[in-house]
Length: 171
Image (cartoon, rainbow, N blue to C red; front, side, top):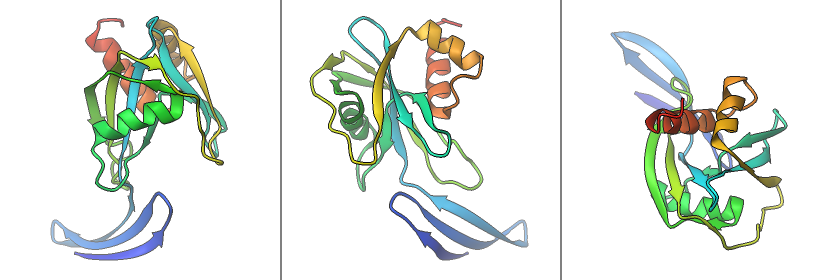
């Protein structure tokens, strides 16, 4: 197998692989992403903590808090860090819900989703210059309805909410 760096970016790289699959020479362009952690978090009143965030080219979308893993960082540590950074809430506990690959076939990214519990508002948001985030609290049944009607378009949010709802028999 031969690998060639095509692009090196701030968050992703793109690599060109030349390899053999079933005795045939093939070429694959693969996005190299370090992975991410996301959390389905509930506030003190049981409302889901969401972030309304600008996601070019789609504009503002509603999603669960998440962030990219730093080099050598464990997904659970990233989840504890990101909930503070994106919502100002601190979680007492993170319970693994699921890990999945959102774009199999051309992207190495794996998203690790946790359920955050025992949350308390502790910090004011200190956003980076290129971040545009508003915290939104919502009842999970309303959120499920928004997913069913196509108003929620983010895969990690859909995955987290629907798996959680299935496990809790909310569907």
